[in-house]
Length: 329
Length: 95
Image (tube, rainbow over all chains, first blue to last red):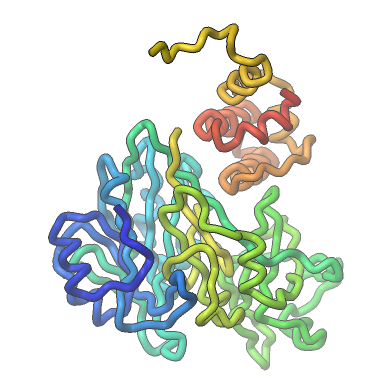
């Protein structure tokens, strides 16, 4: 059974590992480094959503236990050159849990390449981007773990889970943002993480300068419609001189983006979108930017789990809550 | 105790629902073609269908996927997730 959503100590998690439990763990580096070898993957994450509310902690480990679901499993590591194999290495029926280290080539490679992965939609590809304490941005690297001593600053780690025929995994998202009706259309002639010029309402602008001139809140993402799925692009900063913007996921040509409508109360927005824990939920995570911008420390949301520096829902997502359910097929 | 319920004892409305849940329209149903070409604007409720519809539309437009491949991908996904998607299928195919 998956343990109750709470933070565990190193001895408690070690005991689970030594009992051959199949785990995904999230926690601070100094905790994960103490765990014994076994069937687990992990990533550095010091923020969590617990039943009592959002919390920053460097003293506890969040555990997701897939032992009772898995009829078989494989652990794997990937770098930017091998990442495209990931969907081919999943089982015929199951799901894959991927952890990427923030800011590394494999993180960017996933963002750029995942939409083109072969058989991407055959099984849910879920997971998170490992991070660090927000104050340590740029000072401390994120780390991933595949048992110990297998920790890395550069490699992605994955757990491929095989489900019995009677079970089926499905993943869904909750996006509390929507396009602002007042927003002009925004299109891009170049794809990538760095945004300079674009067409706003059909006229060429430097996006960063446009945002500054129009006093648009940069904490709000750009948003585009993938045939009903609202996909965010978070804006991580504007260069004051050039107006260049670094985005949390690449913008694409041939898509229409909008500025997002402000969200007043994130806690209420999540409560409205997801009033209770989805039936048969086995994993969920929310975004660090929702946690920080929405002031979710101490606030409750229905789903519990680690707070990610980017969410994985087949593709790289930003400012989105994701959850995985396993149900009868 | 006999747990077997003769089919004639199942209310017609329930029977229809049971049959519909397990029936995904065949590949040659014209609505599939319309869906992958964007001639029907229908939003699936489930995330994987939204992404897949978007993906096949994009690849069809770029010429990297044929119409039959696009339909097969969507059909296979509906077959896999038939319980989760039966409401969408009912609306889309007017079942």
